[in-house]
Length: 75
Image 1 (cartoon, rainbow, N blue to C red):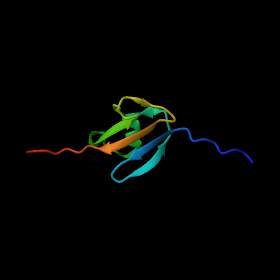
Image 2: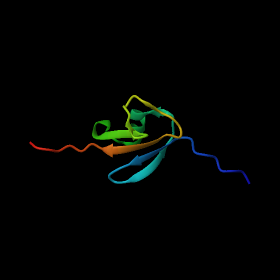
Image 3: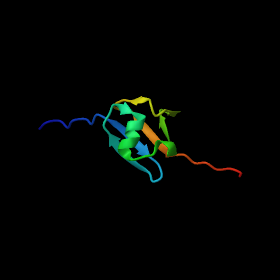
């Protein structure tokens, strides 16, 4: 019996609604968002508790979180 092949890619945790997906990597943040159909102007992307920009490259094995931008306050 052959061993299962490990998935090369990154784990993406999306919020609201909460779900996890695997995306093949490596690729830039903006490309990951495009694959997921997410508008980059509406979310924050976090890797290792730090915000990452659209241009940053994500590698196989990275885990990121995509959170919606929430604004509010006084008018």
